[in-house]
Image (cartoon, rainbow, N blue to C red; front, top):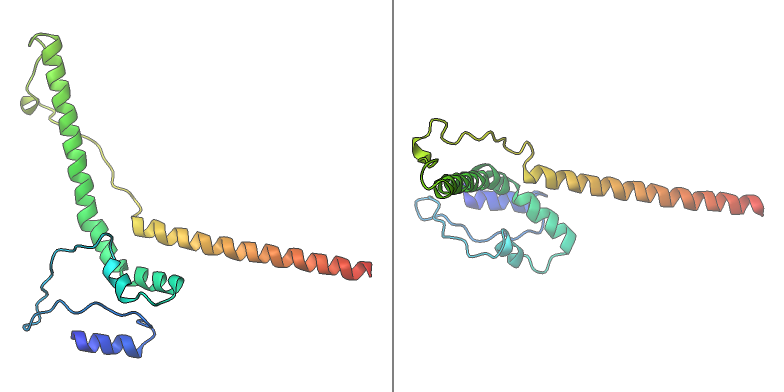
Amino acid sequence: LDYAEFLNLLQTSHWGSGIKLPPSHLNERGLVQLQASREKYFGERLRKYNTGKSGKTLDFMVARSQDQAMQLYETRIASMQRFVAMVVMFHQMGMRVETFFDKISFGFWGYRMDRTHSIMRIATTASPVSGADVRQRMRQLQLLKKVQRSIHVISVAYLRYKEEKRVR
């Protein structure tokens, strides 16, 4: 399936209803040639291509089209950034402890962190739920809340109507 066939499929199906896509990043041999993104936030360019569309429909379509990219980002890049941040933080903490004992004991209790037996064994656990799953669950809960609110409003209105009818 090449890019032209993909665009044709989007236009003939309900999936791409009303969303304009940015131009292709393929070169003449069909290889992807990506440039570094200069967007302020993920999806800014896609939103600019679809400026005249209605808000809620566009937001849903944009979020749906970016789901796979966000999952890849979360599982590859974001988790690596968190890991590197954790390693740097614990290394800095270990260095502070090393220099602290060296200073307060005038070198008597000093040690070299890289020569200790235990090194830095920190028990960590990755988040069991990704950010995309949380966002999807929040949308489901919002929809459920709207439905429950609608049922409540309708039932209160019906009970008032029934009471007024009984009184007459």
